[in-house]
Image (cartoon, rainbow, N blue to C red):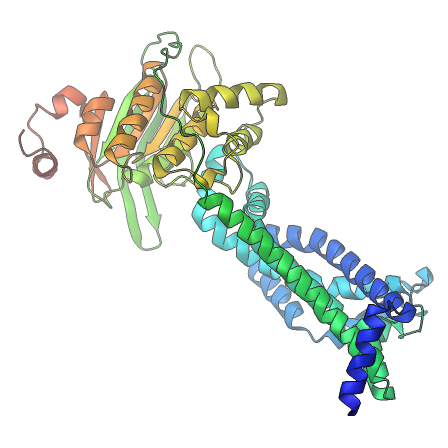
Length: 492
């Protein structure tokens, strides 16, 4: 029997027999590394989320410093902690050097840059998909970033596994600040290093096997959670629900067509590209304004500008409602709705929470909005398990629940099949009939004719035509607008 085979057999017997020294070392390792990851997550996730959305002079330097700390050798971190905690150091009075507490501090400093850097990258990528939509719901930048971490929680688990693996496998740092004192600060990695140099291979092998088993078990657990989450998203079995025939919404009191928003000389640039050029427009209360034009004409840019999601170089005034005297409540339905990886119900409730709706009102508003769009029976289902039409109806319910005075819609039916398109149009018409002011961007002139009272045609970022809907389809239009009309509705 060779030395390796004999040592391996002894190691397995130590594991099966629950050797006291082995268990003590494993227990301390798990305690120290778990606490370090807990503290590291509390600091690193908030730091990473904040750096993803913060805008201040020196942000680039801060990100550089974070990435430098991420690449810093672990023994340097151990040396810094040793100098801080030593008797002559600024924190020496705490007397925690060569204790498990010092090891927790050192491992926390090791994992904070890792967690923060990966969380920041995760949030930056996620915000490109749904950042504007969370802003539209009223989320502050840091709140949006933290919601993105909840949204990407399975990826977040992978980050935490990586951090735990770095913490529990570290040797140099914990050796420096812990001293590898038997029965006090000896953990798996330091014990493996020490016992191997002493020639005690059975204990070193046993600890190595346990260390691999711990990391492997955590990895399997995360994979199981990810698979379970994927299955729930693929599982579209269960009840489905069609949009019911509903009684009309209560119509808001009629009011004179007073202006809500006025634009003068509005220009929006993205770098060297001018997306809107010197636009003048007034939006009145109770109007249903359709923004039409080809792709790239500036419809979505103008819609986002009206909603306050984009700055411009002109004069944009948002006026209070009259006679109420308050700012109008605005909501927006995007072409591709961003839904958090939560249930249907929670997606609506989060929108209400972000807008500051009192807790006692949220459930009633949520239930009423889901009922009106025909999704109340699916309220517990994962939002991303819904069909495309159902997801758009959910996004409409999320906006509707806010009781908006102005509703912005960005090509709300562009990616839907005819049946889903008819359902969403019927819901939009019902909202309009209740007196809500609508602004809808579309390249579908038939939809504009059905839903709007006024049509504005854009081309190349310029507002070319702005007419009541009846006149738009009967008057003589400028050549560019006439060509677009003829191309979309050739029988006219």
